[in-house]
Length: 495
Ligand code: PLP
Image (tube, rainbow, N blue to C red):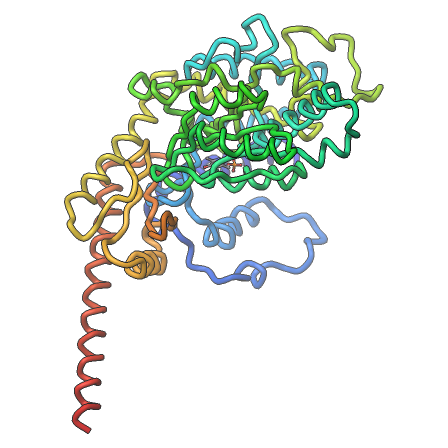
């Protein structure tokens, strides 16, 4: 493909994407395909001769699109939003055009420096403590990771290495493997699966402490667990708290957890993958309470900042702790500007060596929307969730199971779990809206998350109509079945 053909293909692809996103409401949010649908349509081997891009684009429409779950549809309400915007898509395309692998400053100075700039912009926008800024004198700073899972793993691994070093000095009688065998970490039973996985990957057990009735993890529970474990010879390493849990968007009590962590020299990480976007709002200032005391935190721009996946911000109070833990050198990685205070070599801050130029899409998105536009986006999600909540509350057949939090409403049909379960089954069969179930205290419930590229109040009305009419239909079917069962019972009695 030469540049001329690239221009044609690229322009056609832009039109394809714009048409797709503009008309996304035309599709059911869930695809109507069976497992293996694509395998049957595509050849078993790559083509021997080159094909024209027009044929390939036609196949994207014919074969790929039918198998897409439309995450950018406003009828997507499962999980949490994964945001996108036109400027971010353009940023992604430009980054692909440059295709740099910016693991150190010299590998592409713009890649590193733009990341420093946008991470400081974002830290200020979210009103994070100044010590997380690159521009503040000191060892703190921000970096873009691929996902929240990666950010959590980086924190867990760095905390583990710091703890091993500290303990080796403190207790020289212990061997390194003795120390490693005693390490232990903590989180809440409401935390995301990636927290537990980071423990598996780091070969360090992470205890999932029971959150209270209100699904919040507090210092008292952590203190009790640490005291028990220290008495049993364990070495506490890190606590991973969550602001905005995946199930119900609950907020752990950072202040009380920080007090316990400080007392026991335990690293405190905050996973704010979703809720971090609300730090920017004055009306949500309460969420930021205690952040000045945490060692690290993460927030997914691909959830709330209109920057497409993958883009997970991570801030460290002392980045040296990560750099020292992960620093592995080779002669071919060296360059003469290494160690410059204002230009980190981000390869030391992450798991892979190579890194994408993600800052470009962030920069373009932030400039195109402005802080004002980003705040308006978060507020819109909150307002749409409030609209949905009021519809739930006005219908006596439904109940809320947790307070509405940001763009998430957790609700269920009153009665036993079976009704909620069957309701979801019906909705999934119809494919008009997509939600997932969760469970707490033996009660199953549905999570309604405001998602999609540009959700509107009419989309919320659409979703609610779908939900409540399906509950009506379910009740009608159940009545028919009960009547039939009664008739059969009567008949059997008469025989
Ligand atoms: N943490 C929380 C609170 C989440 O809700 C999620 C995903 O929704 C994650 C972590 C995992 O995010 P990622 O896919 O970026 O690893």
